Amino acid sequence: MRTHIKFGKILGIEIGIHYSWLIIAVLITLSLGGYFGQSHPEWGDGVIWAMAVGSAVMFFAAIVIHEMSHALVARAYDIPVKSITLFALGGVAQIEKDAETAKTEFWIGIVGPITSAVIGGLCLAAAYLLGWTFGADTSTPLMAVLVWLGYINIALAVFNMVPGFPMDGGRVMRAAIWAIVKDRERATKAASLIGQTIAFGFIIFGIIAFFRGSGIGGLWIAFIGWFLLTSARASYAQSEMTQAFAGLKVRDLMTTECARVDPRTNLQSLVDDNILKAGNRCFLVEENGELLGLVTPADVRSVERTMWPMKTVDDVMRPFEGLHTAAPEATIVEALETMGRADVNQLPVLENGRLVGMISRDRILNYLVARKELDM
Image (cartoon, rainbow, N blue to C red; front, side):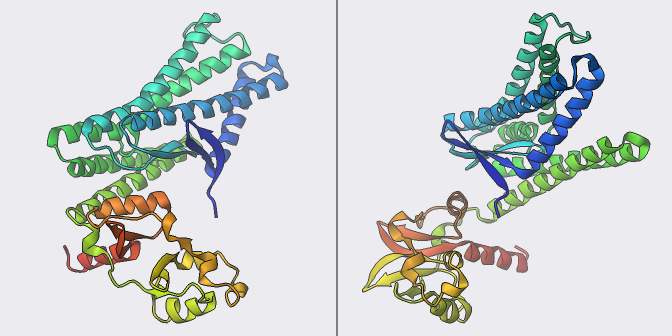
């Protein structure tokens, strides 16, 4: 089930909207309608709700610009960016690999808050040119919208600089620690632990504020803290995993004995004899010694179960020529990154164009489980 809606592409980067953002967009619009209505009831319902919707849309655009700034700086450092997704607490650019230097990490992290601050400053400057002064009331709908956008974007910039990894401020902090200790993984662990501490602070403050009568605002702060805590813990776990794979190559974990099936095998036989009984989850499709493709349970699942006896492996296999692959000397982390980008669970391992094995998430997971059982 999809969790987001594709909105389109900007400069080749896919823009998506998570369903949670739609809820927040409605809440922002309703909140702004009430705010503008109380401030200037004389403008009438039509104008007020047009302002509310327009402000929400422009805030949406500002968040996209914020995330695009991260993406464009990452691209400038030759780091690919797959997509940008807006969700309840803002947005996230799916940067496909970590920065290789502290300097790169710093600029990717800092550019988002700078962008939001610039947007906020430009909005307030435009309102000033229309006659607004700091602390004064707004006299026109356009001025009111610009002032709100100015304040909210500056607030977004400040909030994003909270040093709670993996927020922008946390990434800037990681870059600073990285520059000092000269070790990315140590910097990530330190930034993640600081991020968890800050997240606990948000949660405690939010709960106390709620019981002291702040209402939904306190719960919202606690929810933000919970989100930050979850993200910081995930980042810490990622760092631990990266450290566990230090020096480990694809060659060390790949499977060299790969199960093979004939392309004319029907899917029911594949499931009964190979997937369920033999426990295999990945099959090379071979005919007369020639490799044709790859088939997995996910490919079988794409066919209605009632059709399994009639459909054959060559109906669902993925041709070998179009598969993502790994080299034997690639690191396990690089292989996992490739699997993530391609949204697959395994990769053929090629050496000089020749298949030498398969590397899969299952094999990597088994390695981690074994390390844990041995307290390594």
